[in-house]
Amino acid sequence: GEDVEQSLFLSVREGDSSVINCTYTDSSSTYLYWYKQEPGAGLQLLTYIFSNMDMKQDQRLTVLLNKKDKHLSLRIADTQTGDSAIYFCAGKDTGRRALTFGSGTRLQVQP
Amino acid sequence: NAGVMQNPRHLVRRRGQEARLRCSPVKGHSHVYWYRQLPEEGLKFMVYLQKENIIDESGMPKERFSAEFPKEGPSILRIQQVVRGDSAAYFCASSFGTGNTGELFFGEGSRLTVL
Image: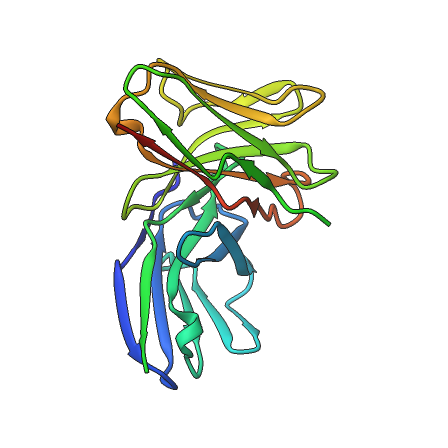
């Protein structure tokens, strides 16, 4: 089945760009997702990318997909303190109709 | 529009008791998923249900755990004879279907503490 891996922690200064990386194993995942979890809350979908795309931009968010290396990244431009949260990447295992999530990257934004 | 509603938000049980967690999906959604998040860990898939049917329960322990999504009413995740290791946040998500983007809408979670 799908296996998704992420680095655990990232610290940046306010105003800098943040890049959160993710690797996955199931090359047949049709969509790949980025979710955000704020403390004590559920997960909120930030953005997703279709597998035939290399890049998707949505305001401050840029998603890059390298299918050859099975690598997904999320870039947050002009990171703000309100962006401090845990970010999860997720893919859909073709053998299972639910999403498989990575362990999450905790982003800490220093003022 | 109400999102996914989970209750209770917090639940405390002693070892050996039963825990029942409820989830009302987004109106019109017929697909429900339960995930477990252990402290400082990611989400682990437990079970996927459509109305009255369990589609995939491959992530749910075979003993003590059960889930249902009746024709009327919320989905229920039931944990019998809870142990300390069951302490976690349990998240429910719903979707309209598995086609299109397959986006999941999450509830705010039910946090179970087993004493």
